[in-house]
Length: 555
Image (tube, rainbow, N blue to C red; front, side, top):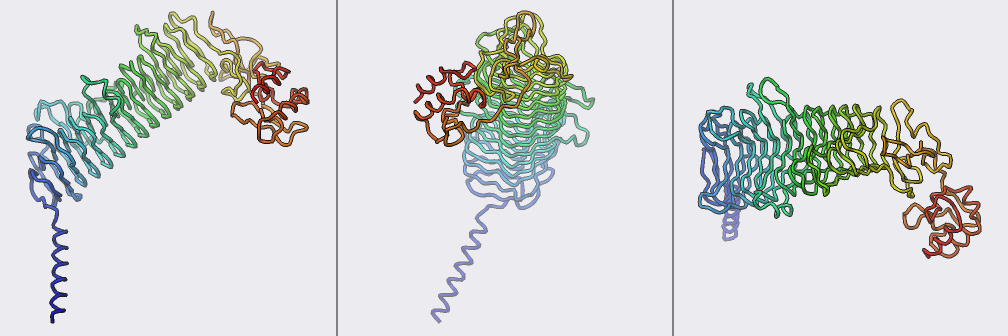
Protein backbone atom coordinates (compact mmCIF):
# COMPACT_ATOMS: atom_id res chain seq x y z
CA UNK A 1 0.00 0.00 0.00
CA UNK A 2 2.86 2.31 0.90
CA UNK A 3 4.55 1.62 -2.40
CA UNK A 4 1.32 2.33 -4.26
CA UNK A 5 0.88 5.69 -2.49
CA UNK A 6 4.50 6.62 -3.20
CA UNK A 7 3.99 5.88 -6.91
CA UNK A 8 0.83 8.00 -6.90
CA UNK A 9 2.67 10.94 -5.31
CA UNK A 10 5.45 10.70 -7.90
CA UNK A 11 2.91 10.61 -10.74
CA UNK A 12 1.10 13.69 -9.39
CA UNK A 13 4.45 15.45 -8.92
CA UNK A 14 5.40 14.80 -12.54
CA UNK A 15 2.05 16.11 -13.71
CA UNK A 16 2.50 19.27 -11.63
CA UNK A 17 5.97 19.83 -13.07
CA UNK A 18 4.60 19.34 -16.58
CA UNK A 19 1.77 21.80 -16.03
CA UNK A 20 4.14 24.27 -14.42
CA UNK A 21 6.51 24.09 -17.42
CA UNK A 22 3.71 24.44 -19.93
CA UNK A 23 2.27 27.35 -18.04
CA UNK A 24 5.55 29.24 -17.53
CA UNK A 25 4.69 31.71 -20.30
CA UNK A 26 2.20 34.49 -19.56
CA UNK A 27 -0.66 34.44 -22.09
CA UNK A 28 -1.64 37.62 -23.98
CA UNK A 29 -5.19 37.89 -25.26
CA UNK A 30 -5.65 41.71 -25.37
CA UNK A 31 -3.50 44.84 -25.79
CA UNK A 32 -1.08 45.00 -22.87
CA UNK A 33 1.82 46.81 -21.20
CA UNK A 34 4.52 44.36 -20.08
CA UNK A 35 6.22 45.63 -16.93
CA UNK A 36 7.70 42.42 -15.48
CA UNK A 37 10.47 40.19 -16.88
CA UNK A 38 9.40 36.86 -18.31
CA UNK A 39 8.10 35.02 -21.36
CA UNK A 40 4.85 36.17 -22.94
CA UNK A 41 2.88 34.37 -25.65
CA UNK A 42 0.11 35.70 -27.86
CA UNK A 43 -2.96 33.44 -27.73
CA UNK A 44 -5.09 34.98 -30.48
CA UNK A 45 -5.19 37.67 -33.17
CA UNK A 46 -5.45 41.32 -32.08
CA UNK A 47 -7.38 43.32 -34.69
CA UNK A 48 -8.35 46.94 -35.37
CA UNK A 49 -6.26 48.22 -32.47
CA UNK A 50 -6.20 52.04 -32.46
CA UNK A 51 -3.27 52.26 -30.02
CA UNK A 52 0.00 50.41 -29.55
CA UNK A 53 -1.03 46.78 -29.15
CA UNK A 54 1.87 45.51 -27.00
CA UNK A 55 4.29 47.76 -25.14
CA UNK A 56 7.33 46.32 -23.31
CA UNK A 57 8.64 48.54 -20.50
CA UNK A 58 11.21 46.35 -18.75
CA UNK A 59 14.27 44.23 -19.56
CA UNK A 60 14.54 40.44 -19.85
CA UNK A 61 11.38 39.80 -21.84
CA UNK A 62 10.60 37.21 -24.53
CA UNK A 63 7.55 38.07 -26.62
CA UNK A 64 6.43 35.18 -28.82
CA UNK A 65 3.61 35.98 -31.25
CA UNK A 66 3.21 32.29 -32.15
CA UNK A 67 2.19 33.33 -35.67
CA UNK A 68 -0.87 35.34 -34.59
CA UNK A 69 -1.58 38.74 -36.19
CA UNK A 70 -1.55 42.20 -34.66
CA UNK A 71 -3.53 44.54 -36.91
CA UNK A 72 -3.90 48.25 -36.26
CA UNK A 73 -6.29 50.96 -37.30
CA UNK A 74 -4.33 52.55 -40.13
CA UNK A 75 -6.12 55.87 -39.64
CA UNK A 76 -5.35 56.10 -35.89
CA UNK A 77 -3.86 59.41 -34.80
CA UNK A 78 -0.35 59.78 -33.37
CA UNK A 79 2.85 57.82 -33.49
CA UNK A 80 1.33 54.37 -33.09
CA UNK A 81 3.39 51.16 -33.22
CA UNK A 82 2.18 47.59 -33.28
CA UNK A 83 4.86 46.46 -30.81
CA UNK A 84 6.83 49.09 -28.90
CA UNK A 85 9.76 48.45 -26.56
CA UNK A 86 10.99 51.40 -24.46
CA UNK A 87 12.03 52.45 -21.00
CA UNK A 88 9.73 54.84 -19.18
CA UNK A 89 12.18 55.42 -16.30
CA UNK A 90 15.30 56.49 -18.20
CA UNK A 91 18.32 54.41 -19.12
CA UNK A 92 18.16 51.48 -21.52
CA UNK A 93 16.42 48.16 -21.69
CA UNK A 94 18.34 44.94 -22.38
CA UNK A 95 17.73 41.33 -23.37
CA UNK A 96 14.43 41.67 -25.23
CA UNK A 97 13.29 39.16 -27.86
CA UNK A 98 10.37 39.76 -30.23
CA UNK A 99 9.66 36.77 -32.47
CA UNK A 100 6.99 35.02 -34.55
CA UNK A 101 4.66 38.03 -34.75
CA UNK A 102 2.63 39.27 -37.74
CA UNK A 103 2.16 43.04 -37.53
CA UNK A 104 0.30 45.23 -40.01
CA UNK A 105 -1.31 48.66 -40.53
CA UNK A 106 0.69 50.68 -38.01
CA UNK A 107 2.89 53.72 -38.42
CA UNK A 108 5.75 51.53 -37.15
CA UNK A 109 5.36 47.78 -37.13
CA UNK A 110 7.96 46.99 -34.44
CA UNK A 111 9.67 49.87 -32.59
CA UNK A 112 12.67 49.66 -30.22
CA UNK A 113 13.74 52.85 -28.40
CA UNK A 114 16.84 52.84 -26.16
CA UNK A 115 17.13 49.05 -26.28
CA UNK A 116 20.47 47.18 -26.35
CA UNK A 117 21.56 43.55 -26.69
CA UNK A 118 18.23 42.30 -28.00
CA UNK A 119 16.69 40.39 -30.93
CA UNK A 120 13.91 40.78 -33.48
CA UNK A 121 13.49 37.64 -35.57
CA UNK A 122 11.08 35.49 -37.56
CA UNK A 123 8.43 38.19 -37.78
CA UNK A 124 6.21 39.16 -40.71
CA UNK A 125 5.68 42.91 -40.90
CA UNK A 126 3.09 43.91 -43.52
CA UNK A 127 1.71 47.19 -44.87
CA UNK A 128 2.97 49.55 -42.20
CA UNK A 129 3.81 53.22 -42.77
CA UNK A 130 2.30 56.66 -42.84
CA UNK A 131 -0.62 56.61 -45.26
CA UNK A 132 -1.99 60.11 -44.67
CA UNK A 133 -0.39 63.44 -43.71
CA UNK A 134 -3.23 64.06 -41.23
CA UNK A 135 -2.31 61.07 -39.04
CA UNK A 136 0.91 62.49 -37.60
CA UNK A 137 3.37 65.30 -38.22
CA UNK A 138 6.22 62.79 -38.25
CA UNK A 139 7.83 62.33 -41.64
CA UNK A 140 7.12 58.73 -42.61
CA UNK A 141 6.85 55.32 -40.96
CA UNK A 142 8.77 52.04 -40.76
CA UNK A 143 8.40 48.29 -40.76
CA UNK A 144 11.01 47.78 -38.03
CA UNK A 145 12.65 50.71 -36.24
CA UNK A 146 15.66 50.54 -33.88
CA UNK A 147 16.22 54.01 -32.40
CA UNK A 148 19.11 54.99 -30.09
CA UNK A 149 19.81 51.29 -29.68
CA UNK A 150 23.04 49.27 -29.96
CA UNK A 151 24.19 45.66 -30.38
CA UNK A 152 20.89 44.21 -31.55
CA UNK A 153 20.18 41.34 -33.97
CA UNK A 154 17.46 41.73 -36.60
CA UNK A 155 17.24 38.53 -38.64
CA UNK A 156 14.92 36.26 -40.63
CA UNK A 157 12.11 38.82 -40.78
CA UNK A 158 9.88 39.47 -43.80
CA UNK A 159 9.04 43.15 -44.24
CA UNK A 160 6.62 43.84 -47.06
CA UNK A 161 4.40 46.63 -48.29
CA UNK A 162 5.83 49.55 -46.29
CA UNK A 163 3.80 52.31 -47.91
CA UNK A 164 2.21 55.70 -47.70
CA UNK A 165 3.24 59.36 -47.76
CA UNK A 166 6.64 60.55 -46.58
CA UNK A 167 9.88 58.53 -46.80
CA UNK A 168 8.72 55.18 -45.40
CA UNK A 169 11.47 52.71 -44.54
CA UNK A 170 11.57 48.93 -44.21
CA UNK A 171 14.20 48.72 -41.44
CA UNK A 172 15.47 51.88 -39.71
CA UNK A 173 18.55 51.75 -37.45
CA UNK A 174 19.96 54.60 -35.33
CA UNK A 175 22.82 53.14 -33.32
CA UNK A 176 25.95 51.01 -33.61
CA UNK A 177 26.96 47.34 -33.64
CA UNK A 178 23.54 46.28 -34.86
CA UNK A 179 23.31 43.28 -37.18
CA UNK A 180 20.66 43.20 -39.91
CA UNK A 181 21.00 39.75 -41.47
CA UNK A 182 18.98 37.43 -43.71
CA UNK A 183 15.83 39.51 -43.88
CA UNK A 184 13.51 39.76 -46.90
CA UNK A 185 12.13 43.19 -47.81
CA UNK A 186 9.82 43.98 -50.69
CA UNK A 187 7.41 46.71 -51.71
CA UNK A 188 3.79 46.20 -52.63
CA UNK A 189 1.65 49.18 -53.60
CA UNK A 190 -1.41 47.93 -51.83
CA UNK A 191 -4.61 49.94 -52.14
CA UNK A 192 -3.15 52.53 -54.48
CA UNK A 193 -1.08 54.36 -51.87
CA UNK A 194 1.77 56.45 -53.22
CA UNK A 195 5.37 55.42 -52.86
CA UNK A 196 7.65 58.33 -51.95
CA UNK A 197 11.32 58.09 -51.09
CA UNK A 198 11.05 54.47 -50.08
CA UNK A 199 14.09 53.09 -48.27
CA UNK A 200 14.68 49.40 -47.68
CA UNK A 201 17.31 49.47 -44.88
CA UNK A 202 18.45 52.79 -43.40
CA UNK A 203 21.22 53.09 -40.79
CA UNK A 204 22.56 56.19 -39.06
CA UNK A 205 24.84 57.11 -36.16
CA UNK A 206 25.41 60.13 -33.95
CA UNK A 207 27.80 62.16 -36.11
CA UNK A 208 28.77 64.42 -33.17
CA UNK A 209 31.00 61.53 -32.04
CA UNK A 210 31.92 60.41 -35.54
CA UNK A 211 35.56 59.45 -34.95
CA UNK A 212 34.69 56.60 -32.58
CA UNK A 213 32.22 54.89 -34.85
CA UNK A 214 34.38 53.15 -37.48
CA UNK A 215 35.38 50.75 -34.65
CA UNK A 216 31.74 49.84 -33.98
CA UNK A 217 30.08 49.12 -37.30
CA UNK A 218 26.58 48.05 -38.15
CA UNK A 219 26.51 45.01 -40.42
CA UNK A 220 23.96 44.40 -43.18
CA UNK A 221 24.49 40.90 -44.55
CA UNK A 222 22.57 38.39 -46.71
CA UNK A 223 19.37 40.38 -47.05
CA UNK A 224 17.10 40.40 -50.12
CA UNK A 225 15.44 43.69 -51.12
CA UNK A 226 13.01 44.12 -54.00
CA UNK A 227 11.35 47.21 -55.40
CA UNK A 228 12.75 50.01 -53.25
CA UNK A 229 13.69 53.48 -54.48
CA UNK A 230 16.72 53.50 -52.16
CA UNK A 231 17.65 49.99 -51.16
CA UNK A 232 20.29 50.30 -48.42
CA UNK A 233 21.24 53.73 -47.07
CA UNK A 234 24.12 54.18 -44.62
CA UNK A 235 24.67 57.54 -42.91
CA UNK A 236 27.89 57.31 -40.95
CA UNK A 237 31.05 55.27 -41.14
CA UNK A 238 32.45 51.83 -40.46
CA UNK A 239 29.50 49.72 -41.60
CA UNK A 240 29.75 46.50 -43.61
CA UNK A 241 27.21 45.84 -46.37
CA UNK A 242 27.85 42.34 -47.66
CA UNK A 243 26.24 39.63 -49.81
CA UNK A 244 22.89 41.35 -50.17
CA UNK A 245 20.66 41.03 -53.24
CA UNK A 246 18.84 44.16 -54.45
CA UNK A 247 16.64 43.83 -57.50
CA UNK A 248 13.99 45.68 -59.46
CA UNK A 249 14.68 48.89 -57.57
CA UNK A 250 12.47 51.85 -58.45
CA UNK A 251 13.54 55.30 -59.53
CA UNK A 252 10.30 57.15 -59.02
CA UNK A 253 7.91 58.50 -56.42
CA UNK A 254 4.19 59.24 -56.44
CA UNK A 255 1.51 57.62 -58.50
CA UNK A 256 2.62 59.43 -61.65
CA UNK A 257 5.90 57.51 -61.66
CA UNK A 258 8.05 60.62 -62.01
CA UNK A 259 11.58 59.31 -62.41
CA UNK A 260 14.63 60.43 -60.44
CA UNK A 261 17.90 58.81 -59.48
CA UNK A 262 17.24 56.46 -56.63
CA UNK A 263 20.07 54.24 -55.46
CA UNK A 264 20.39 50.56 -54.60
CA UNK A 265 23.17 51.16 -52.02
CA UNK A 266 23.83 54.69 -50.74
CA UNK A 267 26.78 55.28 -48.42
CA UNK A 268 28.16 58.27 -46.53
CA UNK A 269 31.77 58.42 -45.33
CA UNK A 270 33.80 55.20 -45.04
CA UNK A 271 32.02 51.85 -45.36
CA UNK A 272 32.67 48.47 -46.95
CA UNK A 273 30.37 47.38 -49.78
CA UNK A 274 31.26 43.76 -50.56
CA UNK A 275 29.78 40.92 -52.58
CA UNK A 276 26.35 42.43 -53.26
CA UNK A 277 24.18 41.73 -56.30
CA UNK A 278 22.25 44.68 -57.79
CA UNK A 279 19.92 43.89 -60.66
CA UNK A 280 17.60 46.05 -62.77
CA UNK A 281 15.69 49.22 -62.08
CA UNK A 282 15.98 52.94 -62.89
CA UNK A 283 18.46 53.64 -60.08
CA UNK A 284 22.15 54.09 -59.46
CA UNK A 285 23.92 50.96 -58.24
CA UNK A 286 26.30 52.10 -55.47
CA UNK A 287 26.77 55.75 -54.54
CA UNK A 288 29.12 57.28 -51.98
CA UNK A 289 28.82 60.85 -50.73
CA UNK A 290 31.27 62.78 -48.54
CA UNK A 291 33.77 59.97 -49.04
CA UNK A 292 36.74 61.81 -47.53
CA UNK A 293 37.72 58.62 -45.72
CA UNK A 294 38.85 55.21 -46.96
CA UNK A 295 36.13 53.19 -48.61
CA UNK A 296 35.97 49.78 -50.23
CA UNK A 297 33.74 48.50 -53.03
CA UNK A 298 34.63 44.97 -54.09
CA UNK A 299 33.22 41.72 -55.45
CA UNK A 300 29.85 43.27 -56.34
CA UNK A 301 27.74 42.59 -59.44
CA UNK A 302 25.73 45.49 -60.87
CA UNK A 303 23.67 44.83 -63.98
CA UNK A 304 20.63 46.24 -65.75
CA UNK A 305 20.36 49.54 -63.89
CA UNK A 306 19.37 52.70 -65.75
CA UNK A 307 20.50 55.43 -63.33
CA UNK A 308 23.26 57.87 -64.27
CA UNK A 309 26.03 55.54 -63.02
CA UNK A 310 26.48 52.03 -61.65
CA UNK A 311 29.13 53.12 -59.10
CA UNK A 312 29.56 56.77 -58.10
CA UNK A 313 31.44 58.71 -55.45
CA UNK A 314 32.83 62.26 -55.36
CA UNK A 315 36.15 62.31 -53.47
CA UNK A 316 38.03 59.98 -51.20
CA UNK A 317 40.66 57.29 -50.84
CA UNK A 318 39.89 53.65 -51.42
CA UNK A 319 39.48 50.69 -53.72
CA UNK A 320 36.97 49.63 -56.36
CA UNK A 321 38.04 46.05 -56.96
CA UNK A 322 36.82 42.79 -58.53
CA UNK A 323 33.38 44.10 -59.46
CA UNK A 324 31.30 43.06 -62.47
CA UNK A 325 29.59 46.15 -63.92
CA UNK A 326 27.61 44.95 -66.91
CA UNK A 327 24.81 46.07 -69.21
CA UNK A 328 23.86 49.28 -67.41
CA UNK A 329 22.39 52.31 -69.19
CA UNK A 330 24.54 54.86 -67.35
CA UNK A 331 28.29 55.12 -66.74
CA UNK A 332 30.01 52.07 -65.27
CA UNK A 333 32.19 53.87 -62.67
CA UNK A 334 32.04 57.61 -61.99
CA UNK A 335 34.76 59.06 -59.76
CA UNK A 336 35.01 62.71 -58.70
CA UNK A 337 32.93 65.87 -58.95
CA UNK A 338 33.48 69.29 -60.55
CA UNK A 339 35.61 71.78 -58.60
CA UNK A 340 36.76 69.26 -55.98
CA UNK A 341 40.46 68.78 -56.76
CA UNK A 342 42.23 67.27 -53.74
CA UNK A 343 45.71 65.74 -54.25
CA UNK A 344 45.26 63.40 -51.26
CA UNK A 345 42.32 61.72 -52.97
CA UNK A 346 43.41 58.61 -54.80
CA UNK A 347 41.09 55.84 -55.91
CA UNK A 348 42.33 52.45 -57.07
CA UNK A 349 40.19 50.78 -59.75
CA UNK A 350 41.48 47.22 -59.95
CA UNK A 351 40.49 44.03 -61.75
CA UNK A 352 36.92 44.98 -62.66
CA UNK A 353 34.76 43.86 -65.57
CA UNK A 354 33.25 47.04 -67.04
CA UNK A 355 31.33 45.93 -70.09
CA UNK A 356 28.36 46.99 -72.23
CA UNK A 357 27.47 50.13 -70.26
CA UNK A 358 25.72 52.60 -72.54
CA UNK A 359 26.85 55.78 -70.75
CA UNK A 360 30.55 54.86 -70.79
CA UNK A 361 33.07 52.74 -68.91
CA UNK A 362 34.97 54.92 -66.39
CA UNK A 363 34.48 58.67 -65.86
CA UNK A 364 37.19 60.53 -63.90
CA UNK A 365 36.59 64.15 -62.92
CA UNK A 366 39.08 66.24 -60.93
CA UNK A 367 40.39 63.33 -58.88
CA UNK A 368 43.40 61.00 -59.09
CA UNK A 369 42.95 57.38 -60.12
CA UNK A 370 45.09 54.28 -60.59
CA UNK A 371 43.37 51.77 -62.91
CA UNK A 372 44.94 48.32 -63.31
CA UNK A 373 43.80 44.95 -64.73
CA UNK A 374 40.34 46.08 -65.78
CA UNK A 375 38.40 44.73 -68.77
CA UNK A 376 36.78 47.84 -70.28
CA UNK A 377 34.90 46.50 -73.30
CA UNK A 378 31.96 47.44 -75.55
CA UNK A 379 30.89 50.49 -73.56
CA UNK A 380 28.78 53.02 -75.43
CA UNK A 381 30.08 56.59 -75.13
CA UNK A 382 33.71 55.77 -74.26
CA UNK A 383 35.98 53.36 -72.45
CA UNK A 384 37.48 55.95 -70.10
CA UNK A 385 36.84 59.71 -69.89
CA UNK A 386 38.97 62.40 -68.20
CA UNK A 387 37.34 65.69 -67.20
CA UNK A 388 39.94 68.18 -65.96
CA UNK A 389 41.91 65.28 -64.53
CA UNK A 390 45.59 64.50 -64.96
CA UNK A 391 48.28 62.60 -63.07
CA UNK A 392 46.32 59.37 -63.35
CA UNK A 393 48.06 56.02 -63.84
CA UNK A 394 46.33 53.67 -66.30
CA UNK A 395 48.11 50.42 -67.21
CA UNK A 396 47.63 46.68 -67.78
CA UNK A 397 43.99 47.09 -68.81
CA UNK A 398 42.07 45.80 -71.82
CA UNK A 399 40.30 48.52 -73.82
CA UNK A 400 37.91 47.31 -76.49
CA UNK A 401 35.43 50.12 -77.21
CA UNK A 402 34.52 52.08 -80.30
CA UNK A 403 35.93 55.17 -78.54
CA UNK A 404 38.46 53.98 -75.99
CA UNK A 405 39.49 57.34 -74.51
CA UNK A 406 37.76 60.69 -74.23
CA UNK A 407 39.27 63.94 -72.91
CA UNK A 408 37.58 67.12 -71.70
CA UNK A 409 39.23 70.24 -70.25
CA UNK A 410 42.73 70.03 -68.71
CA UNK A 411 43.91 66.45 -68.95
CA UNK A 412 47.50 66.18 -70.29
CA UNK A 413 49.98 64.29 -68.11
CA UNK A 414 48.51 60.88 -67.44
CA UNK A 415 50.69 57.76 -67.27
CA UNK A 416 49.70 54.87 -69.54
CA UNK A 417 52.40 52.32 -68.75
CA UNK A 418 54.92 51.21 -66.16
CA UNK A 419 58.47 50.02 -66.84
CA UNK A 420 58.61 46.64 -68.51
CA UNK A 421 58.21 44.15 -65.68
CA UNK A 422 57.95 40.37 -65.55
CA UNK A 423 54.29 39.33 -65.70
CA UNK A 424 51.98 37.76 -66.40
CA UNK A 425 49.99 40.67 -67.77
CA UNK A 426 46.22 40.82 -68.12
CA UNK A 427 46.40 38.81 -71.37
CA UNK A 428 48.63 36.14 -69.86
CA UNK A 429 51.73 37.44 -71.62
CA UNK A 430 55.18 37.41 -70.06
CA UNK A 431 55.57 41.13 -69.30
CA UNK A 432 53.57 44.01 -67.83
CA UNK A 433 53.89 47.37 -69.55
CA UNK A 434 50.98 49.37 -70.92
CA UNK A 435 47.45 48.54 -72.02
CA UNK A 436 45.86 46.36 -74.66
CA UNK A 437 44.16 48.59 -77.26
CA UNK A 438 41.42 46.88 -79.25
CA UNK A 439 38.19 47.86 -80.95
CA UNK A 440 34.91 46.05 -81.73
CA UNK A 441 35.88 46.04 -85.42
CA UNK A 442 39.24 44.37 -84.73
CA UNK A 443 41.48 47.24 -85.90
CA UNK A 444 42.80 48.51 -82.56
CA UNK A 445 46.46 49.42 -82.14
CA UNK A 446 47.34 46.22 -80.26
CA UNK A 447 45.47 44.13 -82.82
CA UNK A 448 47.27 45.55 -85.86
CA UNK A 449 50.84 46.29 -84.74
CA UNK A 450 53.76 43.91 -84.66
CA UNK A 451 55.43 42.24 -81.70
CA UNK A 452 58.52 41.02 -83.53
CA UNK A 453 60.42 39.69 -80.48
CA UNK A 454 57.38 37.88 -78.99
CA UNK A 455 57.62 39.58 -75.59
CA UNK A 456 53.93 40.54 -75.61
CA UNK A 457 54.70 44.25 -76.16
CA UNK A 458 54.06 46.06 -79.45
CA UNK A 459 57.18 47.29 -81.22
CA UNK A 460 55.81 50.85 -81.46
CA UNK A 461 54.33 53.13 -78.76
CA UNK A 462 50.71 54.24 -78.99
CA UNK A 463 49.85 57.95 -78.90
CA UNK A 464 46.65 58.03 -76.85
CA UNK A 465 46.30 61.79 -77.35
CA UNK A 466 48.89 64.54 -77.81
CA UNK A 467 51.36 64.17 -74.92
CA UNK A 468 49.63 61.14 -73.43
CA UNK A 469 51.53 58.13 -74.81
CA UNK A 470 51.44 54.43 -73.98
CA UNK A 471 55.09 53.55 -74.50
CA UNK A 472 54.57 49.79 -74.06
CA UNK A 473 51.18 48.82 -75.48
CA UNK A 474 50.40 45.16 -75.03
CA UNK A 475 50.41 42.99 -78.13
CA UNK A 476 47.82 40.51 -79.25
CA UNK A 477 48.16 37.45 -77.11
CA UNK A 478 50.31 34.63 -78.40
CA UNK A 479 50.59 31.18 -76.89
CA UNK A 480 53.33 31.11 -74.25
CA UNK A 481 55.46 27.94 -74.51
CA UNK A 482 55.40 25.63 -71.52
CA UNK A 483 58.41 25.03 -69.30
CA UNK A 484 59.96 21.66 -70.21
CA UNK A 485 62.73 19.40 -68.94
CA UNK A 486 66.20 20.92 -69.39
CA UNK A 487 68.68 18.33 -70.76
CA UNK A 488 70.68 16.94 -67.84
CA UNK A 489 67.97 17.74 -65.28
CA UNK A 490 66.11 15.21 -63.13
CA UNK A 491 62.66 16.76 -63.63
CA UNK A 492 60.72 19.70 -65.06
CA UNK A 493 62.03 22.99 -63.59
CA UNK A 494 60.05 24.47 -60.72
CA UNK A 495 59.16 27.95 -59.46
CA UNK A 496 60.04 27.55 -55.78
CA UNK A 497 59.12 31.04 -54.57
CA UNK A 498 56.12 31.82 -56.76
CA UNK A 499 57.64 34.80 -58.59
CA UNK A 500 57.14 33.36 -62.08
CA UNK A 501 60.83 32.44 -62.53
CA UNK A 502 61.85 28.80 -62.50
CA UNK A 503 64.88 28.81 -60.20
CA UNK A 504 64.83 25.03 -59.62
CA UNK A 505 66.43 24.52 -63.03
CA UNK A 506 67.24 20.82 -62.64
CA UNK A 507 63.80 19.98 -61.22
CA UNK A 508 64.98 18.20 -58.07
CA UNK A 509 62.63 20.18 -55.81
CA UNK A 510 65.24 22.41 -54.22
CA UNK A 511 67.44 25.41 -54.98
CA UNK A 512 71.10 24.47 -54.97
CA UNK A 513 74.40 24.96 -56.80
CA UNK A 514 73.51 22.19 -59.27
CA UNK A 515 70.83 24.55 -60.70
CA UNK A 516 73.49 27.18 -61.45
CA UNK A 517 75.76 24.59 -63.12
CA UNK A 518 72.95 23.22 -65.32
CA UNK A 519 71.85 26.75 -66.31
CA UNK A 520 75.47 27.59 -67.32
CA UNK A 521 75.86 24.40 -69.36
CA UNK A 522 72.47 24.71 -71.13
CA UNK A 523 72.13 28.50 -71.46
CA UNK A 524 71.82 28.45 -75.26
CA UNK A 525 69.34 25.56 -75.15
CA UNK A 526 67.22 27.40 -72.56
CA UNK A 527 67.20 30.54 -74.74
CA UNK A 528 65.95 28.54 -77.73
CA UNK A 529 63.46 26.18 -76.07
CA UNK A 530 62.10 27.69 -72.83
CA UNK A 531 59.86 30.75 -72.31
CA UNK A 532 62.31 33.60 -71.77
CA UNK A 533 60.31 35.27 -69.00
CA UNK A 534 60.48 32.06 -66.91
CA UNK A 535 64.31 32.00 -66.84
CA UNK A 536 65.12 35.72 -67.10
CA UNK A 537 66.27 36.07 -63.49
CA UNK A 538 67.63 39.62 -63.82
CA UNK A 539 64.63 40.91 -65.78
CA UNK A 540 66.42 42.26 -68.86
CA UNK A 541 64.22 40.28 -71.31
CA UNK A 542 66.98 37.92 -72.46
CA UNK A 543 68.89 34.82 -71.38
CA UNK A 544 72.53 35.73 -70.60
CA UNK A 545 75.37 35.31 -68.12
CA UNK A 546 73.86 37.97 -65.85
CA UNK A 547 71.01 35.54 -65.17
CA UNK A 548 73.52 32.98 -63.90
CA UNK A 549 75.00 35.57 -61.51
CA UNK A 550 71.53 36.53 -60.25
CA UNK A 551 70.59 32.87 -59.72
CA UNK A 552 73.86 32.19 -57.89
CA UNK A 553 73.28 35.18 -55.55
CA UNK A 554 69.92 33.74 -54.46
CA UNK A 555 71.51 30.56 -53.05
